[in-house]
Image (cartoon, rainbow, N blue to C red; front, side):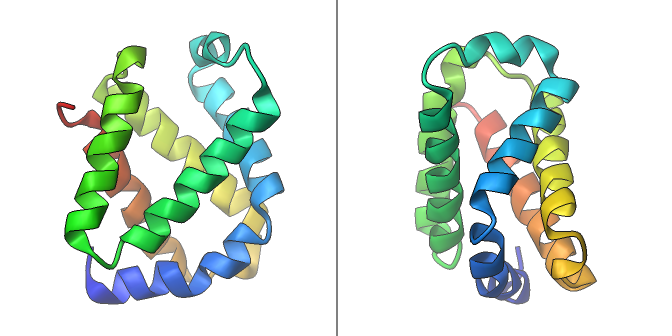
Length: 133
């Protein structure tokens, strides 16, 4: 990601995170539509899972400005998700789910440049998840 893209994501994050409940709800809606088989992975305390997702998103955005920390975070996420045996196609679907959730929740609340920066951030995060843990 470019420095400008990182700044765009970080500067718009407060607006996105203010809608975290809606964002997580829409993310899982789209995820289960894209990957119906993933629903079985979430049998436990789903509100806790949603909060973990929101926390992961916040940590990811905070860590973006430091490439090394961003990589460390990405590798940690890859290790924690390795047990799910996600392939690149699954991760592309998860990326689409997050991008769709952002679009649903933020509608016109993000500029085209911010939306493009968020899409790049999501793509990079999914690439890191696909990397060997």
